[in-house]
Image (cartoon, rainbow, N blue to C red; front, side, top):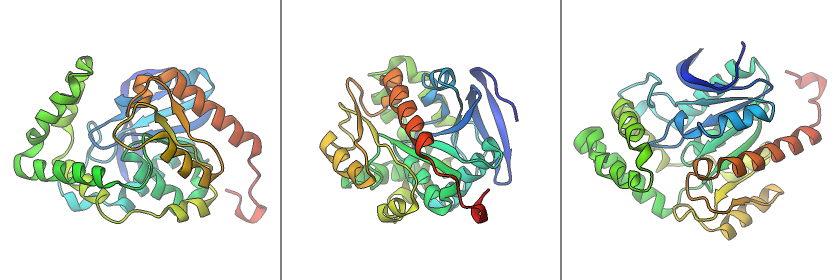
Length: 282
């Protein structure tokens, strides 16, 4: 498989789990960027060329049923296990059997978390953006409301929410509106319902041995304080990367600082990585 410098158009990845829409940039070690609920691959557009310039093959991917990826209209199709295996299939296709660094925004981190526990050898490292990995009461209430709004009124039930978000980012209104209409209704209902249910434990992730870096905006009022991130990050052996001047979408608000934190982390991981025993070599 070949990559190029930043590709604005959509590439369709063919995997044994189906077709997934992606944007790509660069060559080198593979990186997979995973969007959150009501997001898409476009949320990583400012980050892709920066990671390519640093020597990575970066791929931002839509989930099953999200925006330009085909998917089911059945909400029950969207389980943590199914979406995690989707991500592992994408990693296998992009990395051609080699592990990938995974960056996951908000709710997408729950999917990446589960994938890392299912197959830690496929995930070179994990960097959640704007996610403490365990849902708070505030997050659960929001996701429950979203699922109920779509169940009652279709995607249009979230229209006022999208317009509210776009007041602070008016240049993104067209994208937000378009992807709300293109994302499958099953995804819009099933993904938040799944996130409100049981999640993979943090102890399982810590036991997987996958290196982890929490990255968050210092002005993010949605997920938690820097102190909360720090307490959790130290369970995994390193400090959280708090990005000044960034809110919940840290990769959009401060892409250069986010890229610097990620690249520094990946270089540390690559420098300290030990070869797998011969019996386990991929």
